[in-house]
Length: 113
Length: 115
Image 1 (cartoon, rainbow over the protein chains, first blue to last red):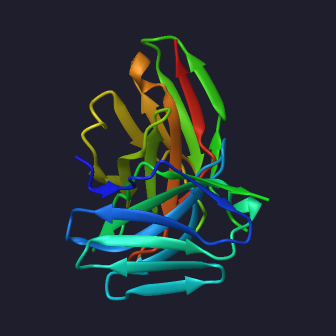
Image 2 (image 1 turned 135 degrees about the vertical axis):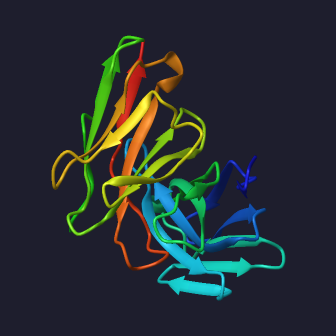
C-alpha cells in the first residue's frame, strides 16, 4: 500500500539546468509534506517542506509546489549542481505532531558537469 | 550544529542473537523515532516514543522489538532474536515537541547485518 509514490526511480540532469522531482500521494488526510536528501552511508537530511494550506514554498535554489486537487507535489532545483546528486525522498505526515513520516521510494538524481 | 548520533555504524550478528542499537537524539528534542531501510527499498517507520512511552508503532514493530530511554540522553532499539530479514539500515530520528509539523532530524544510521 503505497501512500506516497515517487514513480521515477532516477533522473539525470546537466549542471545549471532545472531538476524536477515528482511525488504523488493517495491519502487526503496528509497535511504536511517534506523533502529529504540522502547521500550514501548517511541518514536522510531535511531539505524543504510545505503545509497543505500553501501551494508553493521556496528556499534558495529549492522550490516545492503542491497541487492538492491532483494530490501531487514536485521539487524544483534551479540551477542544479553536481553536489545535488543524491537520493531524494518525498515524505508526508498527517495533522499531528510526533507522527511517523511516510516515505516514497526515492528518486536518484544525477547532475553531470 | 546539534545532530543525532548512532552507534555502532555497522553491526554484524548471527541469526537468533539479540542486538541493541543506540542513538543519542538532539538534546532539546522530545519525540524520538526509529526507521529502517532494507537495501533497495523505501525508508519505513518502526516506532515513535514520547514522554517515556511508545506513541505509535507500525506492524513491523512486533514483539521482537523494544525501545527504551535508559537515561536522559540515550534512546535504544533492541531486537531480541534477529532474523535474516532484519538486515537493514536502522535510522534514529528526533524532533521537538510543541511545534507541530516540525521536520525530523535523522542520524547517520546503523547497518545491521544478520548472518
